[in-house]
Image (cartoon, rainbow, N blue to C red; front, side, top):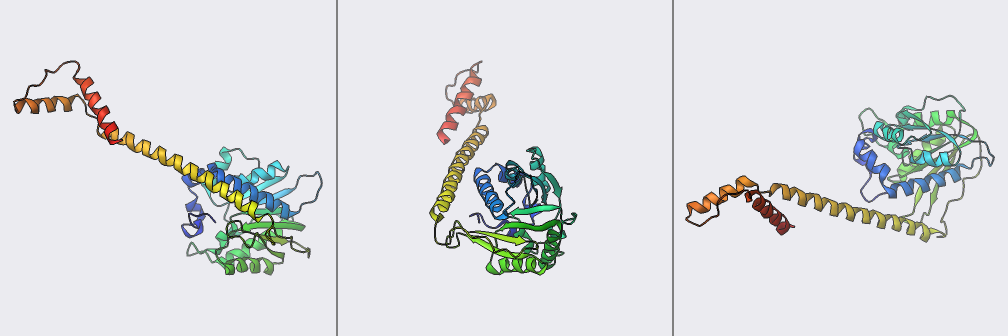
Length: 304
């Protein structure tokens, strides 16, 4: 999870992902890289048939369409659900190719039975674990979500839900809720021994007792590579922060410049004060405004 804390603990998703946050989320290169990598891994775990036919995929918590773009690149048709209107507005602006629906996953999905060949979700389903409103009861919302997800998937299909569980018990709660409605499968944890690279995928199967897919990095293989990718992302983000910091200082300096700007009136007033004190002062002329501008320029640079 990001170093800035858990968004689920700040506000409900439709409130947290407002216009500003939606734009920042979509334009952050680190988030784009992470979303792309997680979606590629979700498609790998989805294990779709190796044929040339496009599949109908459900993207749960599609946001601004970052994961949907990966589905499009793989030649699939997709439909996305999200509770944040601001996120979906950004997706529309970006002209993503999937169909978009403003909807709360906790209310279940109003879809025809057996309609989809698979489903993915990137960093969204853990929001169902939070009672962020007095009317939201997590277990009831999870039950409704998994019931309708099970219903809309075709027999033999899979759902791969990448989650950021806050605790081990939260992950168990999600697995239990899914198993109760008929899913088989379980939790796949990539790089379980790494604090930075660890990723949780809830892999659910409809009408199939196949073994749960193998997790990555069980014996430490590829773990260093995954952590290096995270480090590179961190360095890129740090560079962006530094650049933003310089820009903020520049804007602040410009603001001080405006505040310290001394016009002709100020110069005339100062000259009058000097005259009252008996000092010799040059007469006012057409150059008075130029003198004032020079004083303002010097004051700005002295503060910088």
